[in-house]
Image 1 (cartoon, rainbow, N blue to C red):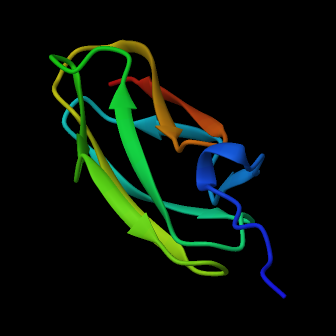
Image 2: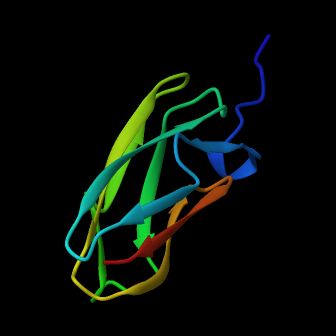
Length: 101
């Protein structure tokens, strides 16, 4: 018997983050751990709502089924509220980042 293979683009998955709200000082940074329940390895891409004021490293991480990947979020001295969006082919997770004094 051959089983139909499911492409990751056909999947719907839930991304999880260990933080949903981050408070940073003007040039502070934090790490956010991202996981998913897709059952296959996925590449997760981190995108800043304003890359000139909020930096996310690395750009993407491949995360295996049942494990987590780590991104660093770093503020660049500009006060305000930003979002870090972590996305895959099957779902996204948004983390709100507030940069204060």
